Length: 328
Image (tube, rainbow, N blue to C red; front, top):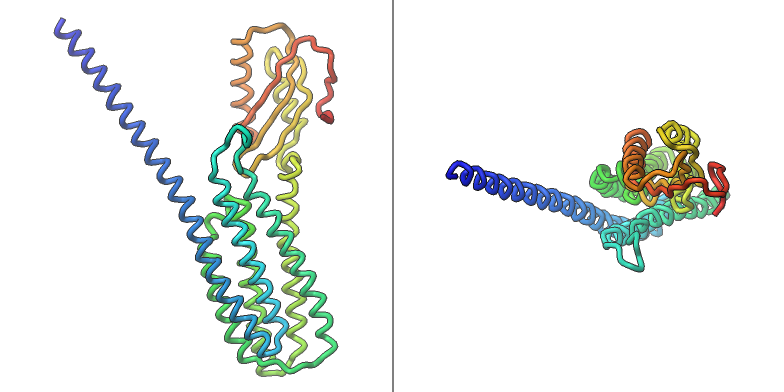
C-alpha cells in the first residue's frame, strides 16, 4: 500500500512540475513576442523623429540654396514621415484582438498601410519629374555648399533608420514599405551629395534636375512592386507561389475523395494563408472519418504549400457545380 501511495504522490508531483514548466515557457514566449512588437514600434518612432528633423532642415536649405534636388529630397523625406506614421498606426492596430463584429481583428491594417505608402511613393515621384523637367529650361545657380552638408546629414539619419528597420522589413510588408521609403531616401541623399559636389567643383547645375528625375524613376520602380503585392493581398488574389490545380491534384489523390471544387485560396495578411474548398466524397462517411481526412489535408497543404488555415465543406452526392473555381 505504501508503495502504491508513493507512486501516486510521484505521479502528482510530476504532473504539477510539468504543468509549471509549460506555463513558464508559454509565459516566456509571450513576453518575447510582445518585446519584439514593442521594439518594432520604438524603432519606427525614432525613424519618424529623425525624418521630421531632416525634412525641416532640407526644406529651409533647399529654399536658401535654390536646389530642386534638395527640395525633392525634402519632399521625399516628408512622405517618409507620413508613411512611417501610417506604419506606426497600423502596427498599433494590428495588435488589437478580434471581436464579435471584427472577427479578423485589424490584421489587414499593415497591408493597407503598405498599399498607401507605396502609392504615395509613386505620386511623389511623378511630381518630382514634372518639376525637374521645368528646371532644365533654366541655368539657375545653386548654393552647392549647403546642398552638400544637408545631403550628408540626410544620409546619416536615413542610414541609421534603415538599420533600425532592416530586420523587421524581411518578414513584414508594412515594415518593408517603411524600410523602402527610408532606403530610397538614403540613396536619394547620396545622389544629391554627388550632385552638390559636381555643382561645386564643375558648375554643372543641370545635374540637379537630372538627379531629381533619376531619384523619381527609382521611387516608381521600388513603389510599383510593393503596390502590386499589397493590392494582390487586398483583392484576395491567390499568391503567385501557389498553383490551385496542383493543390486540387494533391488532395484528389487521397483515399476516399472523389472531387475537389469551389476552391478559394487567399492571404489574410503575411502570416495567414487560407484555403477553403468543397470536397465530394466517394461514400457517405462518418464525421470521425472526415476528421481523420481533414487532418491529413491540413498536414499536407501546410508542409507543401504553407497554408495554415483550412476550411473544408464535405459533400456526398450533392448536385452542384464540380468546377475547380467558380464565382461566388
